[in-house]
Length: 407
Image (cartoon, helix red, strand yellow):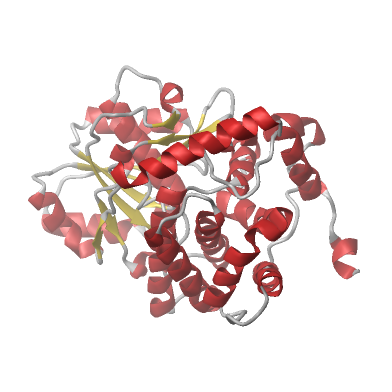
C-alpha cells in the first residue's frame, strides 16, 4: 500500500477511535427464553410480528418452538422462511412485502446471521423506503429509527444479535456489502439454548469459529477499548472451553448456553472495535460463490494471523492465555504461535480444510478489490494491505496444502 493511502487509512481510523466514547453504542437487552417474548411485545405495545427465518429452521422444526409460544399467547404473526445464506436484496424485498401486506408492526430475526441480517435490512427498508439498500452501504447512512427488532440466534457464532451491521448481497451484481448504523442494533437478543440443540455438528463448528474470528479480530485491531478487550477475552475463553463439547454432544445444554454467551460477547467486541481482513476476504467469497461465512472465516483465520507476524504477538499472547494454551511467563512469540496452532488444531478436529475450492483464478483481482474496498479505511487492522497484497490469500486458498502440511 502506498504511503498516502496508509496515511489516509490510519487518520480515518484514529478519528473513529477518538469518537468511540461519544457514539451511541448500546447493547441489546438479553431475554433468556422464547416464552418471555410475548411479555416483551406487550410491553412495547406490539401485536403483529413478522418472523424472518430460513427454510432449514422451518424444516428442522425449530420454528414451531417460537410459533407455539405465539399461538399459546394469542399473538398474530406472519412468517417469511425463504432467507438464503448470504441474503440478497431480492430476499429483503420479499420479506418486506409480507411485513407491509399484513400490516405488521415489529420484526423478529430467527435463525443464523443471514436471517438476522435480512431482518435488519427489512427494518432499514421500512425506515428509509425511498432509498435503495446499495445507497446505504457503508457507515452511518441510515439515520432513521427502525421498527422494534428482536433477534433470536439459533446458531452461536455470528453475533448479529448485538451488532449495528447487516451484510447484504446485491442480487444483480453479487457484490456483498455491509450497512452499518446504530439503529440496526436489535433492541432485544433472545439467548435460549433450546433452539440450538438440534444444530448439526458441522454448523456448530463453523459458527463457533465465526465467533472466535470476531473475538480475535476485534482484540488484535488498533481500536480496542477496555470493554471490548474484556468481551473478546471472555468470548475466547468460553469458545475454547465449550465449542468442542457442543460439537461432540449437541444436547449439552450448558455448552450450548455458553456458546451463545460467547457469540454475544464477541459480537459486542467487534461492534465497537471492528473486524479485519479475515472478514473482508470471507465476505467477498460469500458474495461471489455463496461460501458460508463461518466456514470461510475458519479457513482464512490462521493464515491471516500468520501474515501479521510480530505486530500481534503480544495480543495473541493474551488470547493464548484465555484459550488455555499459554501462560503469562511464556515469550510472546511462542505464545502467539501456540495460539495460531491451537486454531489450526481446532479446524482439524472439526474437519475444516485449508482451501476454498470455489475460487476461480480469473476472479481473484475482483475479489481482492472487494476486500480492499470493504476493509480500507474502516477496519483498524494491525498491518495495512492493499488489493494487490490481499490477492496472495486467494491464491493460497486455491492451493492444495496437503503436501505442505506433511512436511
